[in-house]
Image 1 (cartoon, rainbow, N blue to C red):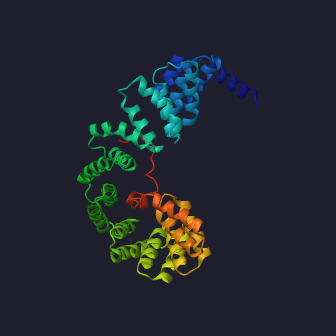
Image 2: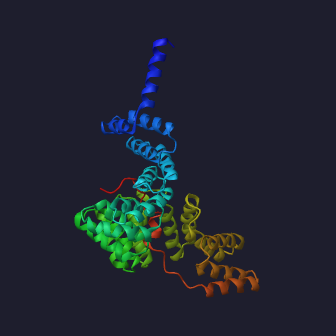
Image 3: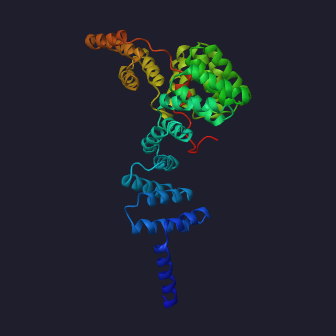
Length: 377
């Protein structure tokens, strides 16, 4: 390296070291973010106890979308001075933007405690609760924000999902009603409305919503399965079968469609086609309780006791609160002459209250839609 190059570097270092907070702020206002960040780093190097300088460095890094570095700067600032205004909010936003939602929650709580009227803190904290599946807390914060912004469809969608997953179906239904007023041709919203109605045991109305969704978007994944499931739930098995077949035309690997087709075949006393559907479903998804319960019952009828016991024990393992697998195990042990084991399973079946059929939400949604990590417009 030549003498001239070394001199230039030394002059640059000296200039950076000589810069003041006023200089760094000016660079930030001019949009010279890289230069501003270098200036703030130089200032913090000269004075490592300058909390305000670390906070300002975090702001510049956030503007550069370097959120991980910004979060470190904010945490250093707060360690030096926990009372710095708005830095908790800035830290919460930096963690939120990285998708670190559990880490975003404590600083956002602190920000909201410091400024209870901060709409940004409420929104970010509500979204963080949603993203961490704390839906009751999410809807408590997001509901008043959504009411104040009736045209904010994205916020209303998130609020509706929070209501739905918090099992506050009346709240969800109202939100979906408002969304359908703005966009009546949204198949997805009709499905979600159906999920909310089903959660309120208004299954016939839920069927109407799924039928509408299927007309609007007949190739939408899960629309035919959802409709078929509601037909199955209301014992309209032939109509259910048609919908499950349509779902398989869209997705040949739909384990649930295969499983419920198998269940219908078993209910119609056709064990061999039932086994075919059920075993195909099990290969795709080994955790479907209906598959194991039905296979256990079929194998029991066929006196294949070892296979029946294995399937029924798997069913109990998947959900020990359901009485049907316990009852089938009691029948199995009676057939094997094990009165003690049979009595134990029969008592378990009697002690359990029959749960209501699983809701449509539980069948077609494994989790709510994820956040896009931007505040709703």
